Image 1 (cartoon, one colour):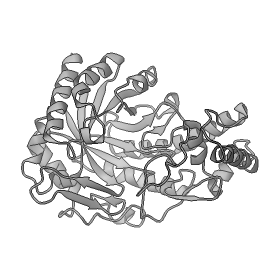
Image 2 (tube, rainbow, N blue to C red):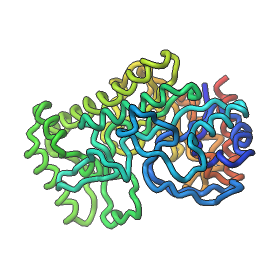
Image 3 (spheres, rainbow, N blue to C red):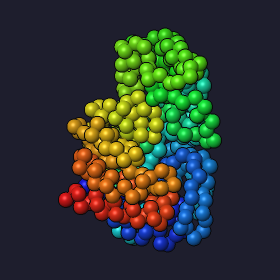
Image 4 (cartoon, rainbow, N blue to C red):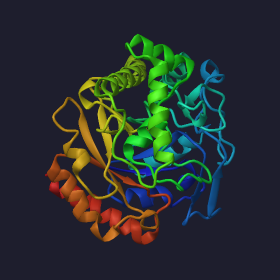
Length: 378
């Protein structure tokens, strides 16, 4: 049983007390961003700054000559050549092992093949895993992380299909509320590589595109969302089958790369959702088809254990992701009971988001939740 928290390198680099603060949470390890997308983050305790702006997707550790032309550029906003390594070193001195947090198909400011929806609109924040270039990119991420001796495990976020329904900068898309079915349809990719994949799966791409557009256009003209997706159940199943096959090809290649450098007990986890239609950071998966010897982190930010129970029963450890930041909507008074409920539901671990951006009161709640989880796991 294990409990961990998420950390950005800028939370630790330059703050001599940060690693001890994280260790004081009682976590078994910290999950530190190694490759991450653009973001703007508060740093409420840092002695140098209060706001960090990560302008684009970036590498927080050196990638080496072999991958320099493939992977994101080095970050410029943390005063360290190897910000990840400096963070891992500080955490190690405080007795906290480091796992790598690697964002795969959610990118920005990066020249790569992206998802194209049924209308021909390109999503520059979402790599399309059907492309060989995206596969090479993902394998490069895995190779760089696996080569590091200061990494004790890895979590891959958005490793599969990423799409419309995750936030983008200055979003203006809430005018028409969309159902989960409609978000799925708006996330389907119709780039050239995906057209080939559809045909290889026995799907008529033109017919699928027409069905998707007709369904979405009816929603854009209606007053309320409708809880239905593609009208043809066989077509819907074939589309999900194609997406599962493509995403598992990507995940399998990453796992194989890691295993060429690390032993079988090196933890490899995927941020995932047991609903295979989802295209968010916790990307939809068919849990039964995941690479052997890997595990999941499922989103339980709403306090429900449903994603845990729906993911059990396969050859994969299931870890519950909990939200510990009140400003993002966490119920910090319920965090302890949520942690215990996840263990009782069958979770083998918890991941608490996020110690760097948390208030001091949030950290106190995280500490109690971690302690309660450890006690429940005995």
